[in-house]
Image 1: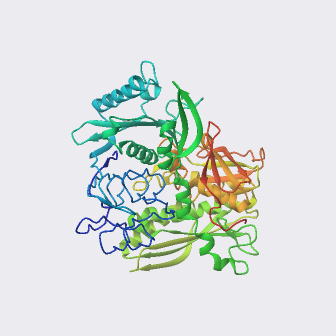
Image 2: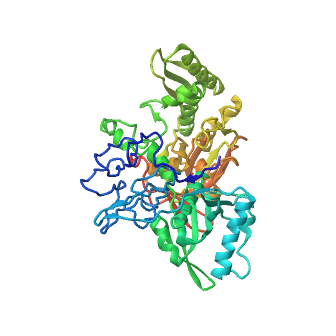
Image 3: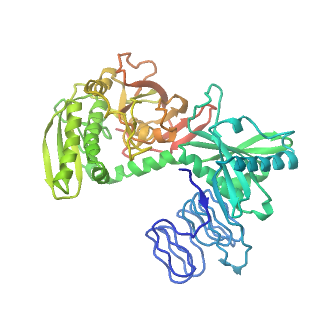
Length: 578
């Protein structure tokens, strides 16, 4: 279902509308007495008429309040907006995502008291899906770029208009008139196929009919375009804009990447919208580890032997045994107990595989509210244990309690692999099973490549890295491919770079989703260039060199035009070198 962006009462989902004209609160915010606007989380409301500030913003001098990144300040508006929201002039409250609401009462200015502002037209931004909408958009383009500006001699139509992947967003007024539009599409580069989409998109042909009577539509279309391409799994979004509009884009949060082409005497700028999908995934899964685990690190032998800190498993001192332990989140256990049971074994077997260990047994700890729910969890664990030919040796089981599940796996190896064995200049290799599909209910988050495999296939994949014997290895966890690579690099005291075009992925997965999801079976390894062992690989595994370890911390993406963008700004866990 395509999204639309519409003016509507400015309530965020799940919020209680207060009586009167005061705007809604973001979840968890305390309502201040009086008519003042609500605050963003964690902000202190000042006495008086000052509007709220978004977290981390520095108040600017002058009569207007600061804006959150990526927003264009409308004339006469003093309150900031959350990223991606359209603020109409005269409105002092932030809006919920996708809502574009006209708010007409005069607002309270910081220094000058009340100001009267003109009402703006109500409009709806949608994906153009009719012939009439496309025709109206193209007619506006021709009038603006051919007839009025003379940027093109006869027509501004090009190959992008013929690309079936191109999406046109249009702004429609209440009477059905198309008042503006913009198109977005995947970038084609030399050597790419007509259907290839590596997560690099561009926007172009932004046009607004009669700008003097449709102010706000242009910025709204830009914000809607940013939201749309992120929803499509893009990791890079570029635009070439005329110099006179570059300031608007900068105020919307775009990065100015330098001078662009000169077209019919009009100078242009290259602009880029920063997409933080990978960083958000890392921050939401691994960033708290160093602080949370600090008490363990203070103990002798805490967090494992030297060289194995931050690894997928840990060698038990004085033995050849590797132990690994993982828990499954309660919501997943409650929603899909058999799948939770299966995954509790899968993630532990993957941990042992990344350490080069052969699994010998499992221990489980299971809690469930009812006997029937417990039975479903156990069924999933048992099915997976049989599939990987690894018995459940024992554990703990309890019923009549909230859902809980963790599994410990034991394996053996005389030569454990470690994440911290990499060095600057090493080649990064992805070993992944691209078969399967998105798990129902977990689209773009969990790729199920294992439940349809035979025991022979699963066991062959489990023993694969032990045969390769790389200098460094790690299994891809909930931090995704990019985040897990950042963890491997951090343990090795390096940074990393991924060549986007080289990363193997299923055709069903966007690049953004594939680099941030749990992929079922996927391992990352790093070794000196040309030293990866040439051993027979399981037929189910794709093995591709797709990056390198670098001296600069963090993870970066290298694109086919040579540009490099930041995916992870610094270390992932804070645990440091292994």
